[in-house]
Length: 260
Image 1 (tube, rainbow, N blue to C red):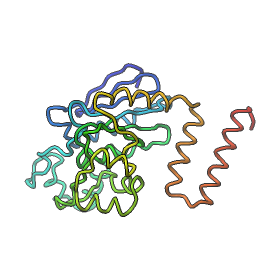
Image 2: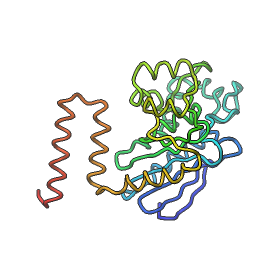
Image 3: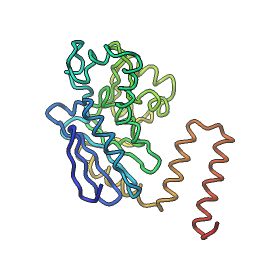
Image 4: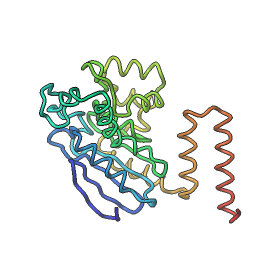
């Protein structure tokens, strides 16, 4: 993906400026509602990234980040491509493999070489909330709301949302947010660690630009090693994490002094 290149597929638009790729959900008339085509397009963006990309910014065109699944997918009737009715008629193995493919559109946003930033305005519901949670960082407007209503609809969050939410807010808060399906407003999101910063809507673009500039400022090797350490710290035992820090620091020192 070369600088300035623009692609649009599955209502996903991408552009690049140097080491920064911007991915925009581009279906504003439907509040950026998502379909399997959206997730395939997102996964293709992840597959196309080269080693020079350092930051990915994920946005939604229009007044909402993403209102979740396209309503047509909720149909229990067969014949709706990618719909819950078709998915529920597959064997367990086939259905899980299908969902695995959907999850690939989300999980790449935690790829080791990049830092991902979600710019969230308006609503981020269901799949929209999970897409925002899949990113490393979130900048939210003061009118933004995140909501995971899947359990109230007889379903579960299955697009990588549960692990990311628990990492961000802890077990008990994640349990309550997922089971009640209630909306989490921007102020609360900031207070509990879901949002890194909350700003007026007019300041969203400038705040994201400032954050991106700060993220690409450190040397690329140090940035990627540090990001890897922060990610592994969530799951590693202290002694394992200490060892990871030692190994990463030695790699950095060897590069800085031209050592072995």
